[in-house]
Length: 292
Length: 293
Picture 1: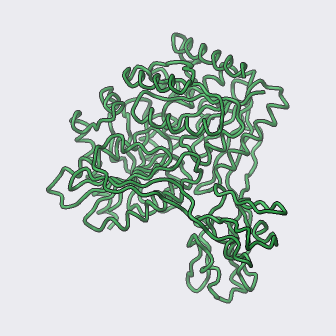
Picture 2: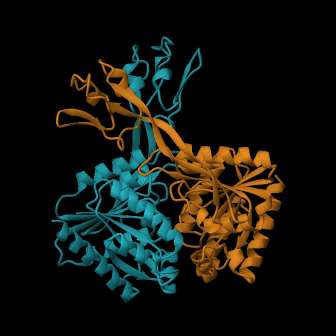
Picture 3: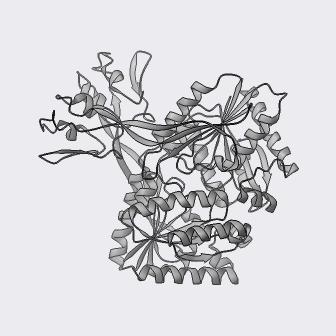
């Protein structure tokens, strides 16, 4: 089973829920599965700040982009005419490819009559795998600063998960904030998407956008309200009206904010949050069973 | 005219609350641009009257006509995004997967594929209740090209600011370091970094600062919720000192921020005490730093 934890608005508690849910589930030895936590917020990966594990492997990640071969080029300009992303500039005496604009579509490379635009690896970032204990593993992908396209790295993380897990695993995805392509790529293989929000007009507004996106993707969703107690009850009203299950309400506690600020998990220090995280898992199981 | 970008790396640090407060305080001097097109919230605090709305087209998407298709599979073989599949014998493009590269269009032997302009969202030009212009946008559901929409919002804001002879353009950027953030930053005059004293806040500040350094933009930092962890606040200040980034202000965690949001107000309107004074001082300092460039 794969559970994605997403939200329209940033800073609502995606990482807190991901880390605490993964840690809690991995400790319940009576449950016969292993847990893989994957940080897919490749622009600002934070889950790792809350986990201390042994580094198992570290890999540099590349995607293929077109590269100009001066020796073969006959300056026919076909490549620059074909490219829809303005990634190729034809300068008369040379051709320039801008890797950040290249979408790796291969059109210029394959359609060049002289094979003068081979696809070559271009570094995007790094992927690391950590082992926390026998039952908890953590995969983090981190985009290099200055690399603009996050989605190709997220896609590689998503495909890496398929190699790592089978039916005896629960995978938890810490998704990036927002509602556009990086989020959609991150949740693509998820069986259920938990949308974390806060009970404020910002939280509600961005939740409605996230709900629209997930409905477009035809993903089952459930809502978790974090910092419960601040703001108002409009989020609950919205969920009720739109028949979106609210499977958790994490109270707004000063102690929780303090532990978070230090990079610590909450389930060991705050019993009521531990209970709530367990309830959220039960809520997921119930929804998945209803789906069957 | 100077363009000021409010940026945070991490989400939820209070960027929009602070930007909206600056917008209320300096209304007559500025045009406001909400470049968090993915999850734009500025309009919730500024209650704008929408004056103009325009569709934003960006990029293309492939469409395969049923008539003329000889089922040669060349398009499917060409597509690197697995966007084309055969459904009930017809070759169909999934618009969510299609990147609009036109590779299929070029290889189709019967010219059965059309490349159509893609509706990527809408943008609005509005008047806020403070009287200044707000340029904002709404990225289409499941749409790509957020960077281009950000550029469009900034271009419109610049055009209007020139017309109105505004002193500033104030930009609220999205979280992260990727394409929409880069699109919000390139060519801007000043970046106001907003951070919080948490391990995530410090981590994300470091990454977003590295990006600003690469783009060679002057910057200063506001530590929001500075009192939630004073040790982490000290660590943040040490980082700022090391990098030579001016500390613009330290703002306390205050429930007034949430209360104001809940009423659809900026905190400088809601609070008549210390928070209002702190933010007023903060805005004056930002202006002084920007004017000195």
